[in-house]
Amino acid sequence: MEIKVFEPHELETALGAIRAVVPRPSAAQDAFLRVLGRLHARSVEPRELPAPTPAETAAAITDPHRRKRLVECAIVMTMVDGAVEREAASSVASLARALGVDGRTSRTLRRVAARHRLLTRIDMSRRLFGRFVGAALREEGLGGVRRFVGAMLKVGEDPATAERFRAMGRLPPGSFGRAYWEHCTSRGFAFPGERGAIPERAVFHDFGHVLSGYDTDPAGEIQQAAFQAGFMRNEGFAFLFFGIMQFHLGIKLTPIAEAEVGFFDVEKVLAALARGASCNADLSDRWDPRPFLALPLEVVRERLGVPPLAGGAVRAA
Image 1: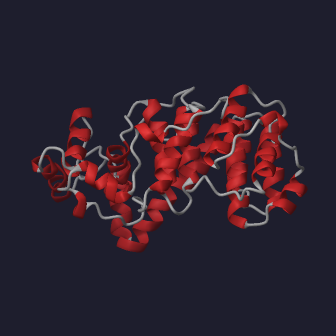
Image 2 (image 1 turned 135 degrees about the vertical axis):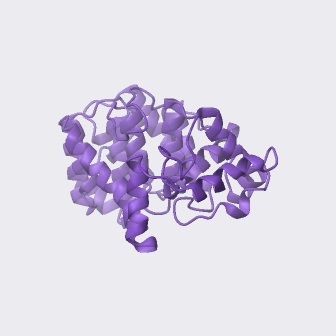
């Protein structure tokens, strides 16, 4: 999910349209727009941006991909302050209709604004878990679906798979595989194949933690969700949307972690998104970690195009 998508002549209209969905933008929301500007190598003053109507925005921005990204950024804009207002959610829906963007995500946003948490969970479960179940069915048949669902329900074990992951502890110190093993054992995480572990199909999440350097506390998890959204080439926004809801809006979407409030640091999360977008591989799409496991972690980061953590910060004025 690349965030730097707008052409120079489109940027002010795009950012102005994003700002216009919120009746009274806050300082934090304007900081979000400044960071978006900086990611496009432009310094912007949000209060001086135009306020185009949805029709004017549609006339100025015609590329379907950029239209979709504009609506997604508008959705994030409504969530920055930690509470989505009904008026803002309705404005996003109007913008999506004018731009011809699929309305499923804006519909979920309206459910967030209406405090319909059960419907929100159902929407997100369909999007997130449906993706993995569908891939398991296509690639492994019903057996793959049973293994995925069984792992999610914390039933069933696969000793051979578990041993394959435990064996990473015998790799050289400093290697990518050993770093993954240490990531799991130091936190008491079960390995795929063990009871209570995440499915092997979703283990790219923990490999991603190792590559990105983000911790597993709430602040780290929302950045990891953004990093993950960045490296995904298909529907990455769903994972950013999930991360903000789970770790900023306090909407519990996963049985693994408790819902949290207030962890959307605009600069850090967008920097994580940009770092993920710099990766040259989608770790969620049939990516095979095995050729990389014995290599030094820093070599793997370099080969996959993961920018250094310290150099990934994006500053907002």
